[in-house]
Length: 375
Image (cartoon, rainbow, N blue to C red):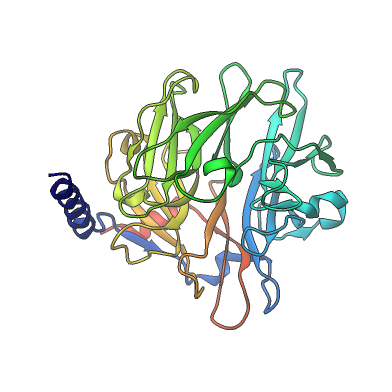
């Protein structure tokens, strides 16, 4: 009986996967080279990978951090003073030890209870991928100078994939790990909270662990009315769709993760709310039967669409990946400028040839992409 039940479940999953198909129109701007800016060029020897970004309060200064090689060492940083049109490398400002920080550095702005704002760059481990967990560098002067900070000591596959401010002024960070912090199944998502602007963090607790699934790379954000937190999750078996969960008590408890709409299926989500109330979420496309699977895309819709399992409005193909390794792109930073321009930054192989992945940003606005999908 157990064998029969398992077989039926497996058949159901296969049938469901076969029936899953695109339910959104597609706006394709991936061929519009004038929208693209190469922040760090890949070469035959150098692979530029896994960027994140943060926008400063002036609405035009953006910092971008990334690592060398797939999940490799940190070290590079660039700054744009014109909303992502041009970029300047500032690697020389980094502490020497920053080059020993491993895997997917992630940059955040956080403000302490006294109102002091700092920039933090957390990474997964120090020295090796199995080294002390979550080392960081920190700036107290808007990125002009940086100093190395002690590791938090949290074993992880990646450091915080996202951080959100809570109503009491503290910050909630989410990350994932496998057994003992290893990068293997089963994966689980944990959260921890800082009340002092990033210096100390609470004991992490598991908030998403699902039998038969591997939730990871959480993207947490607040609903437009401020009432709840929503979290989109990569599902690393890639057999069905991505996952999402909600908290209506500032992260004290979370709903059981459920499948996202088809159009939000992907890896390493990041997004913004636009001035008209819509949401743009960028990610590596992993949707079953998608014509853009493995490329860098964005979903456009409303919070109501996410909350109620509706398809959304449309998708955008942002950049085409020419990587031999399927899906070797994504991991974006997404920033909204005051004029409505969205700056989405990722890593990918931008053209055929021997050159490895580059860090690339693409600029667009919804007025332009809306016009591409109008009947």
